[in-house]
Length: 397
Image 1 (cartoon, rainbow, N blue to C red):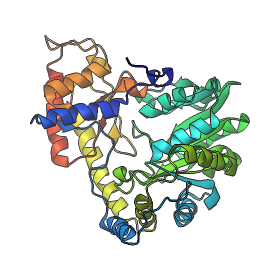
Image 2: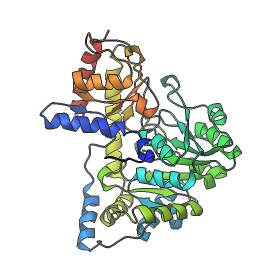
Image 3: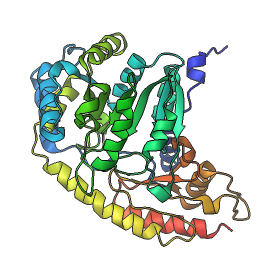
């Protein structure tokens, strides 16, 4: 007999992780699959960070750490916010968690009551939607298209906010589109938030160091909404530390206390060794970030150029992160004589089956007319993957 709670039944399986699992299973069988499904830098963690972790083991950092994180790490995060983002978050406004995903659910569970509305900008990262569902909230989706670079207009945000709205989730640079809002565009959205007292914003800035044009702007840097913005970040993407699982927030003191209380019942303080590694990362020179950014820019140009050569695909140029999200509407309803493509999820499966390339259908991101491609892999594999995708798509008519 099985008995699964309604809470868990209401959640969808993460499609990015599901596609990655299928890729791994095929590779385990000896099948040559190129995985462009997971949002993970292909670089190794820099040596100076690994050395800090080794030293932490030798220095016996093996006891329970404080629930919100070691004080010196929270001070380093506070300094980072000041130095890089022009944000004043004192250490008691910082909570360190087991990755950005953990930080997000802490905030959502601490703010959202059952029935509260949460505005989500689509295309959105897959877990935003289901984390809101888990909290008993109601997602309110604002849709965008590739024609406006997947950016919302201020009036769309205004129209989405109601008397039941408690939270807006904002992400720039964006996963899954690579879109980046300019300072002027962000200020217009911030002015909408300002008008609605009691509405808070999560600003997910995990990709801030992977931006190709201009500078990253933190939403909380607009002083008139600073006290209603929760800044979420971490070391996973900017330092190639996905497996270390360190995320953090900067938030109003009352919310930081709420997240601390919640985390104390769920996980307590996160891995002590990983925290010491994160401290070294934040105190580093940033050279590894520049190397990765330059590589991702080269790969972006390579992949976008090759995708534009494929008949039927509609492609824009991402300004950050390491994703591109082509519009595949042209292929919906087409067939290779065996498989008929009904939606983006089926197209992703078709590419896995016929081209041996793993992508993710846009349905999971609230963009059913697109697929997401991660270019966080080598130039050689990207060239081969685009070649395979082109051949597979040319067989659809």
